[in-house]
Structure formats: C-alpha cells, structure tokens
Length: 259
Image (spheres, rainbow, N blue to C red):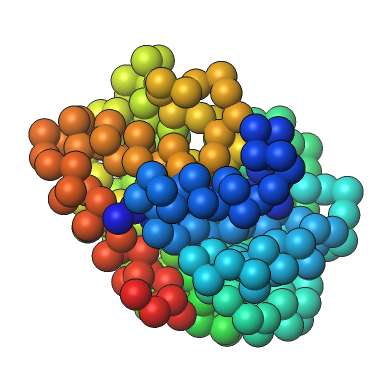
C-alpha cells in the first residue's frame, strides 16, 4: 500500500487515458496506490480540486496558493479557513517561499506564507510547504508562526540535511518526490539516507518530475511506488517497510483522514 501525499490531479496529463481522470485513478489503484492528496496551487482552480476529492473516496484535498502563483486571488486567512471547512480538505497549502525565480516578490511571499501558517494553526490542519532557495526565511516563519502540534510537511524536498533536521525539530515531515531518483541528485540522496523513516512521506508532485525510469514523461500517481523503491534501496531496507511506514506517517500527520 502506497500513498501519493502530493499530486495535482486537476493538472494531470490524461492523453493516454482518453481524457478520463477515472482511468488514471484506476491505474494508480492497480499499482498499489491506495490514497492521494490533490494539492491546490491557486484559488482560480480550487473548485476543481474540491470536486475531484468529493468524487473519489481515496482522494483528499488541500487549499492554498503556491508562492509562485502571483496573478490570481490573494488568499486571506478568512478565505483559507472557509475553504478548509469543505468536505475532505485535510491540509492548508501548498504555500511557502520560492526565491529561485521570484525573489523580487519576497515580501508578498513572506506575508502570504504567514497567513497560511496562521490559518493552519487556527483550523488545526497541517500545512504543506514548498521551499526553494529560501531556507532561513522558511525556517524562521515555521519557528514563529507554525503550531508544532499541527505541523506539516516540506514537500518535494531538495534542500540540505540541516534544513531537514531543523524542520523535523519543529515536528515537520520531509517528503521526497521523483527528484530523489535522478542521477544528478546525489546530495539529495544523502539527505534521504539521513531522514528517519518515521518522518518521511513520498509523493509524485505529478504531473511534474516523473521518477526514473519514467523521467521525461508526464508524471502520475501510479509512479509513486518508484520513489518508495528507490528510498528502500538507499536505506537498505525492504520496500514493504517503506510503504508501511510512509503510509502510517501520512495518517499520523493528516489526522482528518481515517485509515
């Protein structure tokens, strides 16, 4: 049993499935993926994210605005809290900081990230954090505004062990995507070896970043076992152990989900 803890099903490439999301969900189920978290990145498509979660019993949703989504509706704390009451919403996000392309929007990102963290604290739903080239600011906001009893996850993690360890100290989980399988990701693979299995999640971040051996192809939830297989090889442990522990971690973090 595997869980894709972070995917964007509203943006999935469905050309090989006759345009039908049901077939992509079926393919994931047939590959041992028993649950998926469909993550919002803006409010313009939030209705579609919520509709997908409502339609499929094994799919859950989050509500939030990605740090690089700068042209749409700006989320207030009140708007996030209202959306968080929708059926099957189990998380706030994705939110966070991304200075790789957008350092000129730093102040906007910091204020928005703060609002997401405060909304998470108030509604008691974990926060999903995207962080890129913003290590110290991300950790500072987590320390100042995050509720350690609610916590969250640093998703699609690509940073160093120091950041992972400090986030774990704040009760956060670290999630690895297909990036960890890439040949040029040696530093990240060393981090994955160090992250305790009981603080780890796995994800696809589909339709982006398909894992080896599917790199370069559109990504989808059915590929999340490839991430688990790679983690198992890195750590020298059975695949079943990775599957079982990351699944347990998902249900431990996202307490609104019934295993």
